Length: 325
Ligand code: BTN
Image (cartoon, rainbow, N blue to C red; front, top):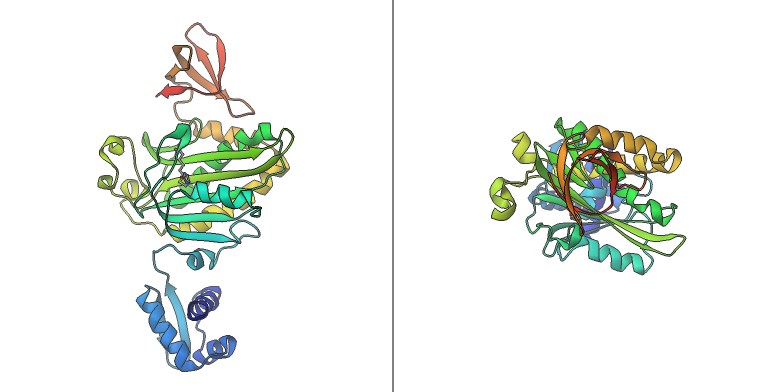
């Protein structure tokens, strides 16, 4: 109950964006005494919220703490369906696993699961995803798109393009996409996306789209084996980033872009993807189960496969392979 009141106070102040709200007004809206409001404000200050309080004018919110929690992400989140339910965990095995569990039980389209730390974060091809520190954004969403199952792989590329758009706008960095789903800055990995699907022949039951973005890690936060190939927003920009705000922008942009994708289809996404493609027209080394060869990246297909041209000038389509960049 007490926490609810605190959440409500923040919600009211955050909505008014920098304007003063009197203690009297808060006490009327929340139906608690002014002394109780004052006590809550002191508790909130201890949690890292910063207020200005001016006699006769009231309180004004100056800054939220740079700590993730469900309420701080929801306050000020301007979406219609994405993140209307946010499940936040201080620590979890994998947000992806919880998302599956909930989706199996019927969780609705748009629910978002976020954790401060993951102890068993997963990447593609059963690789582990190091996320046991609280420097990143570890997030999974439950989606129930009305597209046929064979188009699901477009969603990974769609997420990559959307994240690039948002992160480039907010950070002024140049971000590239390494097929199929890694975001790179200066040749180092900033983020990864994992799309998992539960489907029948004709219809997708649900998609779980998870992404991990390295935000405030220092180089020493990465384990030695990945240090030389990983980066974070902090490393490239020499500043700390507010993860709550980043998540809010990402979810807002994602919701808008998702509606556009359903309306206009994959073509605009493909074009954007190609503009950001890492090593486009460059030579890479490809290893499939059967063979290994050099080739040049030429594009992507509508189902998200990589189009390459090999040294014999043969066009080939790669669905799954180890690629050495
Ligand atoms: C990859 O690079 O292979 C994909 C990495 C995806 C990591 C995210 S973090 C949130 C979600 N939970 C997980 O366990 N994995 C995804």
